[in-house]
Image (cartoon, rainbow, N blue to C red; front, side, top):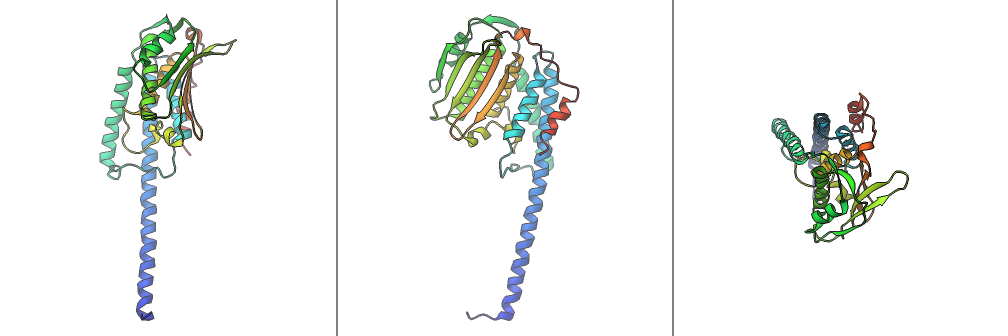
Length: 279
């Protein structure tokens, strides 16, 4: 080639120095955003813990619900390449926005969950009524027990939010199905299971606690949050599972929730649940 080695050498040296400087800068920015993301996540978890504690006088086992939501996010919510959304580079703007979002979340949870007291209801009738207009979700309530003690208003929130999850997760196709049946003999439980085609991408839509950007009181992550609170109010629990081609959200409720003797969480439960986020 018609080049002068004496001129080419400093050009190549400068290019290499620029490359390493840029890589070092990118690493520093990524580390800064990672720290901010971790602070953001811990703050959201603390908001949930405080919210759950404030709900204890109205909702049964609210602290258990907050614990399980945080642990679910810790297990499934850290995707490769997670990044803080635009705006968090400006720490003040991001902090103010997140504080406002946390207030919105707490207000929305309180507004959605209004306990009305337990009474015996035919669960299959309630589920069928709420799912009547959900043409995209197939329904199977053939094996539901009748009647069952539930808090009618909170149970309606549970089913409504499961149906909203179906709308979010399977907006077109995926054959979502809502199944309701009785499971177990010695300790029977009412099982309410939402399932459909899915993968880890769909699963990530449910982990709003660990996602970048402002926290939101809309979307599948918030719907799942309410499902957790509603299930634990009935002394139940929630399991979310995702395989290579299937995703399910399963709620299990004891047939006699009023006889549940679930012990209070230990005094150090907040410390223990926050420790699950220290990966």
